[in-house]
Amino acid sequence: MNRWLLPEAIEDILPAEARRIEVLRRRLLDACARQGYEFVMPPLLEYVESLLTGSGRDLDLRTFKLVDQLSGRTMGVRADITPQVARIDAHLLNRGGVTRLCYCGSVLHTLPAGFNATREPLQLGAELYGHSGLEADIEIVRLLAETLAAAEVPALRIDLGHVGLFRTLTAAAGFDSQAEEDVFALLQAKDQPGLRERLASVAEPLRSALLALPELYGGREVLDRALRLLPAAVRPPLEELSRLADALTGLPVSFDLADLRGYHYHTGVVFAVYCAGSPGAVALGGRYDRVGKAFGRSRPASGFSVDLRELARLAPAAAARGAVLAPWPANDDPADPLHAEVRRLRAAGETVVLALPGHEGSWREAGCDRRLTLNGGRWTLETLEEN
Image (cartoon, rainbow, N blue to C red; front, side):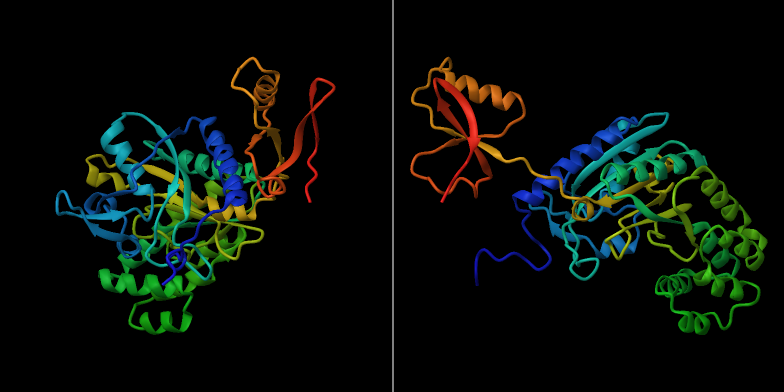
């Protein structure tokens, strides 16, 4: 076996892509910081009792698990940073008012999310804790839209949904947990024949209402259709979606009332954002008010996350500035003009590489496109010529 081979759907990030990702990471975290979101860095692994609390079975199946050699307890490598940030808010910061947090770090999945997807996404996100009103959801969606714009990957479509619709309908139908899971899976698969068969014994009007959900997607007219087709009990979630859409004027808002991704821990508004060049959602988010309960504080919360590696792939590539090749200094005197010129160029933002002896002809592959040359007693920049 080749020792340099990596596991399937795990890959190295090489210099050019790594630079793009890092530049983007700094830009987006700075954009969050300007709106009051404080940066946190949760650990890569935790005990599974903490890591998976309130997150549902779907996250459990995506989490790598191992035994801690110190305690003998089961630990997990994080597959999602959101529950960790909820723990930090609820248990460590313990603030009484609104808390805004942002983060960026690698997560690991047992299986890739789709064809050609990585099992090690670089998750960047923002979370707002402590406000139960719709204003928090409005702020989070606006922040996500601004974050994507800062990455020069504007949102083409922001699909809004509400898990309260599904929960209200299944509760009224008297479903047990297994029946609810069955219908949830069929809705996510948009399996209308399977849904009709599964709902055959459900009384009207609930049967027709659940069957209508996969067809309720599109523009603002979807809410009007939903008001006509669905029972009056789901009016509050529909009104909340309407108010949210009003507040997001100017953004490409649409609706998908059967999109329940994150259903197991989301409690209200959910959204998925689509951008040019990606077949699936680039960012996901919504309200999840119950996750902090197991940590001792059931705080209202709303947030989003995005895979920074995917975002960097979609973002336009900025022209990378080449480095300057400087000769290896003849002495170590800091006052030497060569040392002074190298310091000046680096302070001005240039990358300056010192030429180690014996490597002529290989400096362009190291990123150098100019050479520092002594001309008439002055150090000047010239185009690097190599055979």
